[in-house]
Length: 270
Image (cartoon, rainbow, N blue to C red):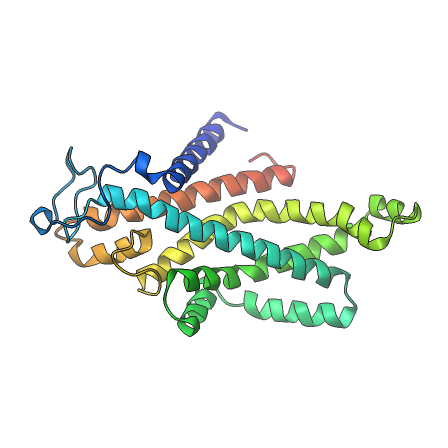
């Protein structure tokens, strides 16, 4: 890995680490109550007292960005974890199922893969209704097909591997051989993909919140904050720019780390 690539990966890890710390312990970073309003302090520019300025209600934008990390990252991690688990189960079972069952599962997966993930999430949350929990469910459903396809491909490749066949010859029952030698390898491949998927899930959740389908005011959430600042962008750019920057930096950092892990898993130099 070149020096430039190492610096980039290190910066990405630092961004994700800082975001994770903010999500876990926002009180250590926030300077004010993110819900406290003061109309006399509305739309103040960035200063020593308000690092990122204030919004239309006089709330401290910096503190809201810090507290918003827990929701945005939480939805991304939850959706990715659920999608990985469900995709692992469905894809692995499809990979060892009879041809007809496998064909039906893969055709359904192909249909879902034909549509952008955000469009699927948008349809799901439109059916379920707005709200943070429904956004997490929608993003999870939208991400499942990718993990199903990869899990199925890995399962079909590994189930005929030499070490799996050797285990069967030695008398290891097929289910035990599958659980011990196939599933861990499939899970490892999906985990690499999930690193990139976290960024995609955060972006999808923020997009849904931006459209008004996620958490409602006064909840500090990056997509919702970005939506609230668009109407005053010409007058107070900081209201939208800082939550937008938080989304961008987090998604880019997760993508950089995910692509680096994928390159290493494939035996390539990132």
